[in-house]
Image (cartoon, rainbow, N blue to C red):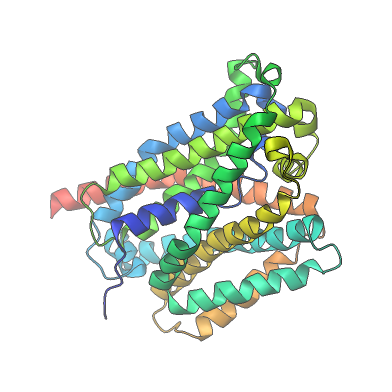
Length: 360
């Protein structure tokens, strides 16, 4: 079997955009109700806490000598326990990926295309995801390279365009919440950082060059956290705490009221494609990780049947929530339960790999 290998720079870029994913839309709406104007501190705190887990993930991934993800996990944990880990990993990402697919359709339906049913928008994105999932990780990373510059420039353009609209008095004091509330808000951000950590664990197995991988991956996750914290600060500075708290996706309101240079209107038209691309990044990453995990559980689960079956499951999960409120609640459940569990699972995995390597 030929080995799939991805360059370190490609892996780092993919990790950065997948970690941010679609979080830039709801981030302020999650942390500001608890931490107020100091919500950005909670975001930074969460991603700073997650950095040791990034190094654990790169340590474990760097020890892999197997040609793919499934065989690497079974080499770490043995055939039986390895398959249990792969099934749990696939279950968690399948659930989140399906919900994020539904989120892409519902939010785009509400923002830009109210006459188009969300299921049609979900299906259109799913076709792209299934196509790249069929061809594998290398093709997915190449599409990230092609689209990432557009995404990063769009996000940077949004942040720069917001600066003239920021009212400093709405950001004062910079830390206006008790430490307990900031810590509580940071708890809600920890699953977002863990999503990046788990993608680092996965893609690190395929990294062509592993020297310095921990530093590169930590920088990617840290940069994602800094970007989300800065966006939170801009949202509060422009909209104010009251407006920010009243919306599930306050960034959507932010771009609708933006007037960069006080003469350019219709900025949201530039953000709609960014939302689609960000959704593709996150759902595509989830789809590929689930696909490779299931292939590791049973080698007979081959393409194209694997992609077709997963496409149906993702679509089924995406259409379960009846509205945006149910969708947000479902994403919160999978994040705060299953992704948080990896803050305990990953150290145990790293310790086991460490002990096993010493015995060998």
